[in-house]
Length: 286
Image 1 (cartoon, helix red, strand yellow):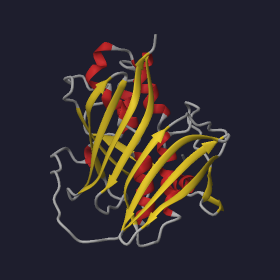
Image 2 (cartoon, one colour; image 1 turned 90 degrees about the vertical axis):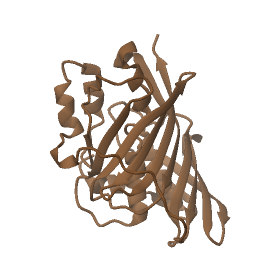
Image 3 (tube, one colour; image 1 turned 180 degrees about the horizontal axis):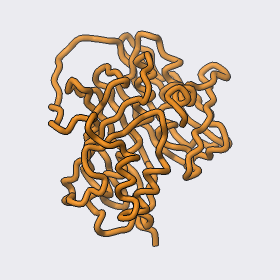
Image 4 (cartoon, one colour; image 1 turned 30 degrees about the horizontal axis):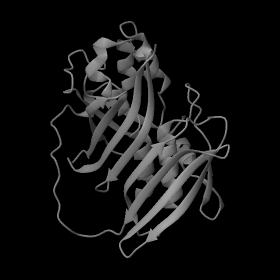
């Protein structure tokens, strides 16, 4: 990814028929379609079919098959409901006539009501922190597999600055929390729907990895197979991805070869703007 505009272009789908769209792929070093890309593109597809006064408040998706980066992805949107306050859509992403991802998303009019939230943690501010790619250089010799994984996923559209040391040497099983600042690398005036699509893309970066952190002394990174199974996201309040957002990540559970990651995303003012959860397959290779 060269810049923010290239990411926006990637997420913006070509309309080929009523409720039918086509998307291209970011060519990942691991040769499979990046899950965050499918999330963002699927959200773009459904946003193109809802009234402009409806804003996404939740999405729930399932990854069914690994996507081929060499072939475009086709998105078919179904209209489930157009109500007085809420609009519901379902979208299926396909390659070679087979579904690789399905998602339901709900949209709502802007309305008043009760307001409360969990507080934002007090952590170091992003300005004095190293980027994830800069931190990776510090563990190059100590953890070469982790270093390579971080370098492979590097891109120039969204910058990540972890608060904690990437070596994560002091985690206790079940109690490990990571704090990561993130924002777009360039200033862009964007609509809230596009901000949602960009945040959906970014939300897939660290969640599943968190379920491995409490067990890092039991395995080598190159001996573990990871694959996303499902992804859920709630948009609570508007935000501006031109400024830093803090993602507070933990893992509530790992069992039966599955791990769960949970993230709370705050803006610089301490407002909780989104909550995200993902479950994935985590298997030690034999």
